[in-house]
Length: 295
Image: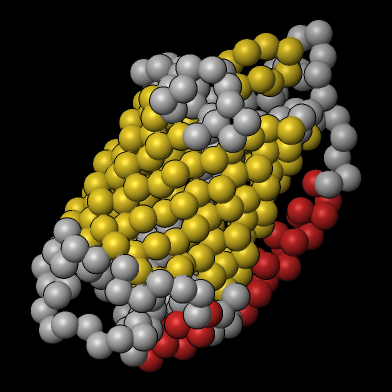
């Protein structure tokens, strides 16, 4: 779509190929959109997430969106190994017009109702969103870009008040994690629930040693004072319509392929990068960069 996006895609693909050749590193886990069942008791984490987006033709021409940066700041705390709580704030800046705005908040909780480990480790997720309709950060995808029905006038006026729920199914197989999220987003303004999905597979490179230690629930090995766990993920993210019209109609919905890589440097810092490749004509192209700190 535009040269900067294509350049980032090339560099990210090259980086992923190089990382696959590395053997003497340690592991950690992390997706960009999909959630796994992992919750680490006592962990307090702050993350800054930044997206560089080149909008699809329909979003550019009909939605008036230019290339833009969107950002989310997240603070997460896990009081137990079965419950995690998060607060998020977000905004964006259009790079063509210079227009930017703060767009709102999200409040999230994840809970594993089972003490024992189960084959798919079912985990429940609920989130309340209080957002400006112009919000642009893609934390998930659901519903329609071009609905196959006529929308009622005034049904989406005012701020977005949305309750999002997910059923998270996740399991580990040695260095691999496989996860699937079923997503429901209920708009409290009109009662319509939009559906989506996020599924991924994650591979971690790990080299255990005598000096291996547990740090905030993450298994890491010390190598000269520098912790270097690396994980690589591949996710498929998309929309499946809503309660008015459910189904897979790709010319009207957003669907993305999302490769990513995460590196943890030092005991408390991590950096992840990836990109969302739009698989349909109404999907955007997005470069994603996240910084995180365990406080």
